[in-house]
Image (cartoon, rainbow, N blue to C red):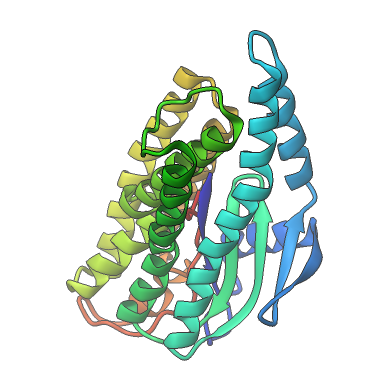
Length: 290
């Protein structure tokens, strides 16, 4: 499960090499608005309910117990929904702090996306990127306190008690999402955006940064897919596949000398080596993405 944000810059999008934007637009085309949160439209992809149904059914497959199925439904349904929504809310809040605009939040089977826009530099983009994963710290503390109150201690070993196991699952999920979105330097996850912004802030030319991003995204994409197969987690496999397809798209732009067509590097690729400009727009995915 990844989370992140789709940043919509203040400059017009490129007319070519814009597969990333088309992909994220297609996600919105397959979604429905279910309400608003602090004035921000909340959209759910049509496949999100199917994801909850499938994961719940898997939880009931023998030798799993009825409790396991119900736990899957609660944790991967309302709790995950709320967790990802808060994560994306972090991106939205940070965007407002840097003077940007918030357009909508999308929840889909592979995580969440906040559609935001700002005309700041890489430092501002870094703040927006980090804000999402950092929301898992207070969320994790909330579930740790709930677990301590219910079980009398903070033990993450499942005991068969539904209420405390729910708290344990929520704690583990928040830890995993925070680490995954902060420390996996693969585009379009939050960690990939953080890595790219850090390189640009250090003066790495956009073309070189894009090439490095292709390499790290490919390596981690393959690793994520492998872990998905090893643990039998089909969602993890899809996340890894998503990372790999984005790496291929970015790689094509690097090879063709069209890095400026990629939203993440647009303004940087149009200036001299090491010179830093504003972010025209950037794709996101997490925690993230995932």
